[in-house]
Image 1 (tube, rainbow, N blue to C red):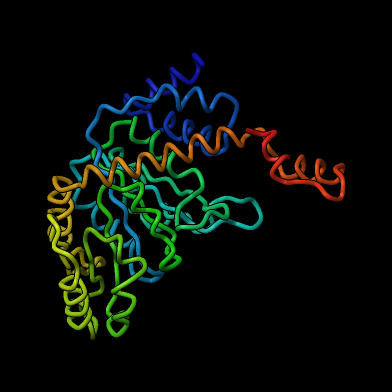
Image 2: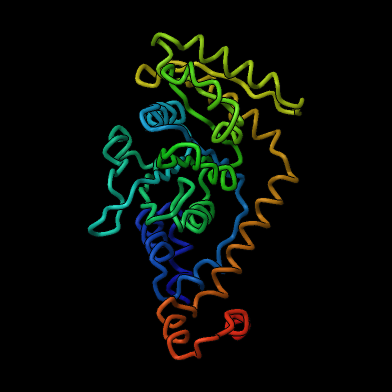
Length: 296
């Protein structure tokens, strides 16, 4: 306990090694990780931004450009990558794609492996983000793995969700009307110098026009991440959206997060091997509901 309390104090003072250690403890559920989580405090107005979209949309390049623009801010990037089949670690390693900021003391970059989790996020993403929140960053930027329309889970973690598309998506109007784009607070059409960019912007705008009127008008922003064009406008809209976060929606998402935490805590002592053994030793006409009741 005392060791982890000192770890929290260190990373709140800006010690990135202590922060990296705390994340490792939580991500791998090392001994005492619950004590660390129990003692986190959240008294700093961190802006949490989710960046999602299909593979090849240029999400990492966009974040790289955002980091240049946020040079005077303290920013953490959590990049969720596919899992290595050999060591269950992060396969792509976004540190390589954001090499410009590797030695920047204001920037903390961490890659997380999905470890089989669906929805575009790591299985431990919620806990890891909470640890980083406690370290008092101005922004936390979450890049999802880019698996397609299933990665809507990022909306339950971020205050502002940015959906990044590219001109090649211009003819797929059905995709714009459903799935992943339903979670968007901001649309970005990246690589906007390519043919079809204006068509994509038009299709998104038409799809948004069909929605019920809301307090926040979802913007569609054209960017060229490699050239760092459109990034100032994107960050301006992110900051503006932070003033329009739906409190009721946020509270509902927090309730879902709490539900998962309780669910995980109650299931911690239950293993599939144990259940298999119990079924194997039971009678042929076993009642699964009676067996399940023993674990209430």
